[in-house]
Image 1 (tube, rainbow, N blue to C red):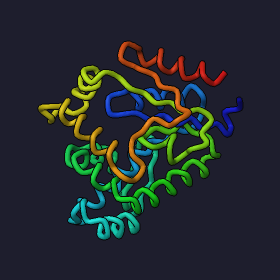
Image 2: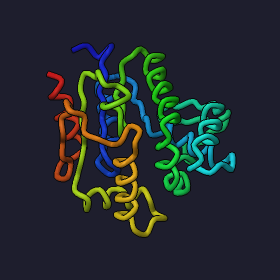
Image 3: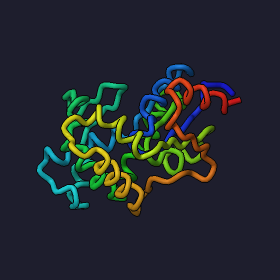
Image 4: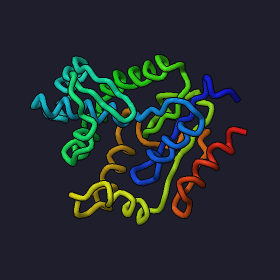
Amino acid sequence: MSSSDLIIAIDGPAGSGKSTVSRLTAERLGVPHLDTGAFYRTATLAVLEAGVDPEDAEAVVEVVHGTDMEIGDPTVILDDRDVTSTIRSDTVSDNVSAVSAHPEVRVLLVDAQRRWAGERGGACVAEGRDTGSVVFPDADLKIYLDASPEVRAARRSGELPGVTDVGAAIERRDRLDSSRTASPLVIADDAEVIDTTDLTIDEVVDRILGLLG
């Protein structure tokens, strides 16, 4: 299979390893890495900076529609400002599920994600929570990563130093993302499920590349 038009969609909950795995997989294949979550985090930051209630669908859509964002890897630009670090703040993390739950927001950003891939030649390794089920339903390979709750919490604890109960924060995010009406976190019917609990990053990447045949 040629990597020139290859699309791999990697989904999974927080702490499953999808960010690191997807970046390394893209690097090994020599294709762009698409972090779909960065789109929603950037939109959330724009909403918060506009003083809009994340639950107010109409106001949120208006802000997102008028937002100029450039999603790179890793640099993220919002209205000509580098917000690469800011979109990973606790405040954004606490509100991203509410913003991303609005159906019209998802329509806007899914379209932006597909354009992102097209502008870079069409091939990519995309990570997120609906990349295989919604963004790229015809992806050449769909992967769903998971791990035990304890391992996921341990992995995230180093990334969320200001959060006292990482396990509870993960459980809340998973519950919100899995129960939303628009593009919930699900395992695509044709996805390969990989439990990363007892695997190293390299072992997971090797398993994914092995599935390409």
